[in-house]
Length: 358
Image (cartoon, rainbow, N blue to C red; front, side):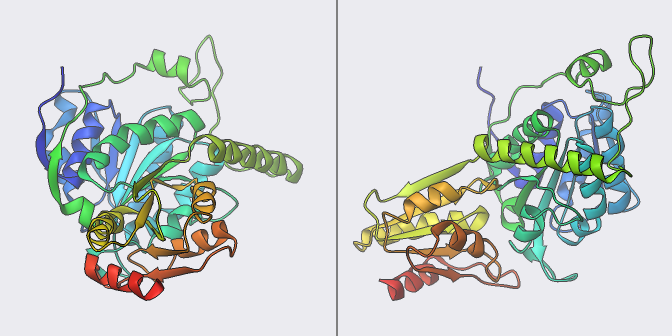
């Protein structure tokens, strides 16, 4: 039986979805524009119903290390923050990538650099898709563009995190986190027992028993030959993710002159551009990357053979732009349109830019 829709903010949807998907623990610290995630969890009090642990930690550094501990025990654990808070977590995220510890990290982006503004932004693209911390590693990065996807990507994020034993980032923005839409939530899923975790996650550190020794969860390796072996194994895993987990959406004309590449809130605005342009007889298609990593480079490369030019729309100085350029390989012109400081471009601004490209 389908669930009744609720009217929720994107941040609230994350909190509801976390409880319903059987999350074991949330560890976070307030920061605009994502504070409603923690506030909603505090109001819903899931520790009384599902046993989910909810902790307001003393800092973002503490939050990420709690993730390391919980995820290392095979538990479904998550945090949420915004931009500068995620920056403080980078050391711990690198540790978890190196130790292959699954977790979900929600970043509801704000403007920067530095403390910046509490207004929305998409300027953490490179931080998320390039890992952010030290060493050679990648993170799966999901980019929702609706409140429904904010809810849906919690469960998807956990599924991918445990499938590949890796941290997963949901890279949202202040627009999607704060806007309200109807959301259909999934039914309540039970939390796994320790026996189920031991069976599903034989790598997890659950303590010594008659059947098993203690598993040590660490990213430290002092012998260079073994460290190289670990890195080779990680790179093999990342290539598998690139082969199997690319997600994107195509919207608009089947015979376009121009393609827009946009994610998150920019893709919502660009969808309106496609509609307005069609009314004026301008054929445009929108390709929306749903996974920012792995990036849909093959789909963009194929699309470049069908259009005359591409416009990358994002609320930053042009971060995804370089990935699109690399995918196109110089076959067609690629231009960029972006706004800063929390200013969201209008559909007409983007359409005017496209008209200069025709």
